[in-house]
Length: 164
Image 1 (tube, rainbow, N blue to C red):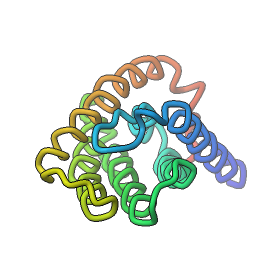
Image 2: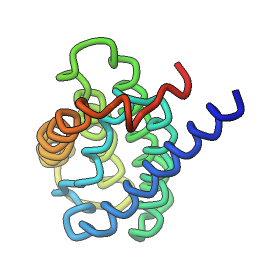
Image 3: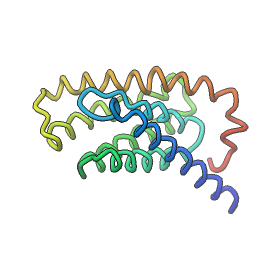
């Protein structure tokens, strides 16, 4: 039982660390009204492990802090990733092609409001939903599906069953 909790924490921490590194490494395209956050490709990981849900939330929060985000962005941007990750986890028994849908939807709906009311970006909300949505489709839909395809073969070795 204790080993399962430790494994869960290790998985969550590792996922958070990779998310932060990717966010900062690709910082020029990770922030703003037109963004392709490469680290969002990891939001498909709850398809494999529930540890990814808190890991992605923590990683997003730390990435937003290190990226110079304002408190609203740190909070609501991280909540968008949390909702997307939780949605992916809830859909894990369905088709793998549904894995990127919750993060795409959550970020497309929430992030434009943060940009408008937090950062004062003076663009129409629907336009920012389009730009953020396209970025999410690229990062979660395209890159995320590449990640899910690559990991599916090795899921038993990488993501041992820590909790259901």
